[in-house]
Length: 113
Image (cartoon, rainbow, N blue to C red):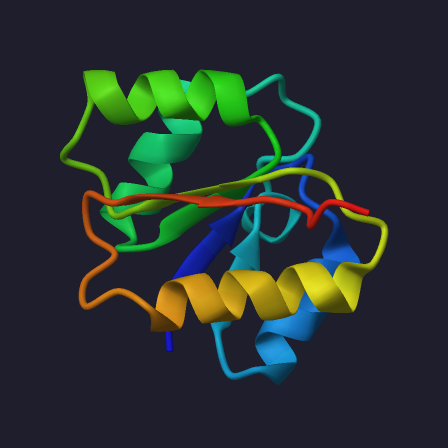
C-alpha cells in the first residue's frame, strides 16, 4: 500500500477511507502544518522528504509542480467528489494500477453523471 500525505484541502473522510483500505495516510493537520498558508512547493518537499505522495484537490498548481520538480515521491490530484468512499476507491485503484508512484502524477476524476 502507498504512503500518502493529504494536503490541507483534501477531505478527511477520504483519508479515513484510504486508511481503511490499508494506505498509510498522514494529513497536513497531523504534522502541525495546518492554517499556516504553507506554499505548495513546501508541501511537495515535505512529502518527498517523508517518501509520501501528495493527495490534493489543487490540480492546477500541483500539475505545474510535477513538471517543474519531477523528483517528488508522487502526486495524486483529484476532482472533488462528495461521495468520499467512491473517491477513495478510485484513488486506491489508480495507485494499484502502477508499479511505482515515485515521480508519477496520477489524475483521479469524478465519473460523469
